[in-house]
Length: 113
Image (tube, rainbow, N blue to C red; front, side, top):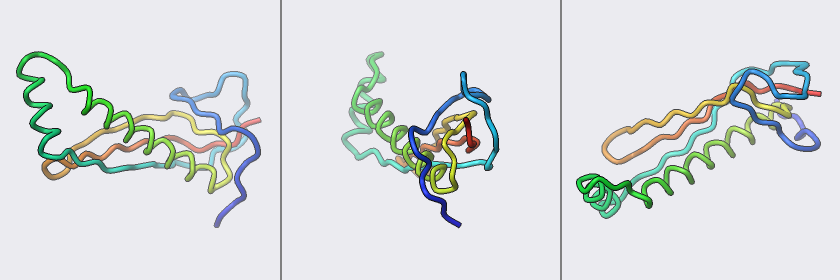
């Protein structure tokens, strides 16, 4: 079942509440995911930087983009079920196969006033 998107912003929180808002209904768990792959050159550059004690800015940038994509997916899914907020947001990052990274955003979709 699909609901029209809520008017106004979608409130996001990593805590179990949204300051200044009252949670009037919980709609359940929502997930947002994206998958990234690091190419050979990305793995090579990350390996070299790790050897010399640096951090791979290119790799970190890709992780940030992927995290934002997962969060956008989470928001879309929450809006689809009529939520105007998501609480308890958490991110998980895992590698599947060699070089494939899954970023997952998970939270509880809620209706707030």
